[in-house]
Length: 149
Image 1 (cartoon, one colour):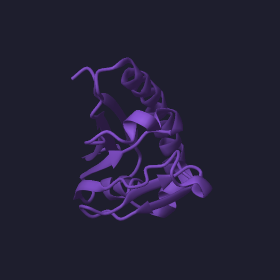
Image 2 (cartoon, helix red, strand yellow):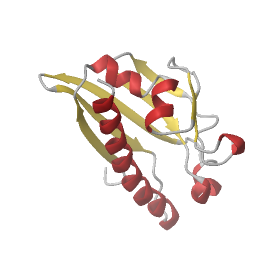
Image 3 (cartoon, rainbow, N blue to C red):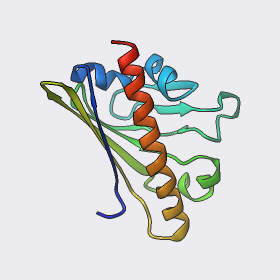
Image 4 (cartoon, rainbow, N blue to C red):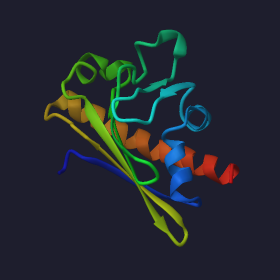
């Protein structure tokens, strides 16, 4: 359990809108990445590109949706950036992200679990990097939702 990354946030929107932030390309491209190719069905693409001209690096190219329940749950594979590519992106299975969306009176609680971390120093370095990145990502998501209510 200590190798799991957990992040959560309360978004001032309904669960379907929060879910859309993780499944609709036009939303991804405004709060996190430069280009997105997400098909939110089991087996569908879950590809985000931070440098679209270099699709093999700093992307989730080849990642797939593992589970989907609209407005409630989304699970997908995840890859690492260029500095962790040599071990993260060739591991099988890849790391896995599960996002749940829970309706509350105030909006939607979004809970993210990032699992699949191995037990070596380089994997721990990658995990620590992602802890920081997911916190920053959720901060950007919150700003985007507030600006686009």
